[in-house]
Length: 396
Image (tube, rainbow, N blue to C red; front, side, top):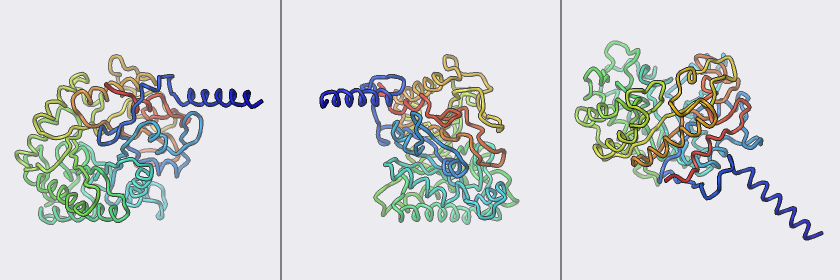
């Protein structure tokens, strides 16, 4: 009986190991990278809100913590956005006591969840009360009446410094800090009041923009001076076509030099002037030309053209890249290829934007549910998809 029991135990262990080996790939094709080696990043900014509104995540059919799912498949860095005062969240829910998602307290919770699992953190300061992107760079309401560049610089410095010192006091200093999000023409340049300092680099105000960026960077350096963690500073621009122009101007005209990472967004549906296969050449050229690390700070790819709810999807109606259909396998293969190309070019990381934005009862300014549910790492039942394995693949 004892021998039979041992045989059954061995069979059970073999079965469990086989189950955990997604796609039947051999274990010797697996490698778990550290964030210092190569950032396998996931933006989990929405997770707290999704879980508060009924979202459930599963891996191999079992309900699990989404942070743990990501960690167990090789994610080593969590990206999280920070909005200044997102009071509009309470208006959307019609609840004056609602959590201010992507406000400080919510962000602290996200960082704590990541750190408790040993993952590094990239804190993304938007310097806005809502989304900052190439078409929307609206100053926080608290700063909208500012007319002095010196006052604005001080505001950016003090806000950035205070946030990081609060985090550090909790043992939550991030390993990376973004000064702005997709600042293609600049930051705080949309819906501005008369007299607000001009920070539009596209219209030549690089001196002003550089001064504000440098204030944010200095705050990071000063806040971390006595910390065990010294965050790397990233600057972030959308679309590879803008990188050499933007960073060239930031350095030469804006006098912005004390940063560590050239970061960019790459979404093939919008960013078409630099072909997918040319990204490695560009990354190599940037690395050599500026002497900085280079990272993809945002990317994504659909696994389906369908949707799980009535919130229309942003991604998926456009043509796929040749060789990468909008399927589960196509999504995985795209991420494997992109990651390998970035590594080959000497890049230091790839971060996926909102891989956990599954459907739920959460709300934003445009709908209820998810506009990204077909580009996540989970199917419409919340089950982890094959794409998660790209993070622990043994790359060449």
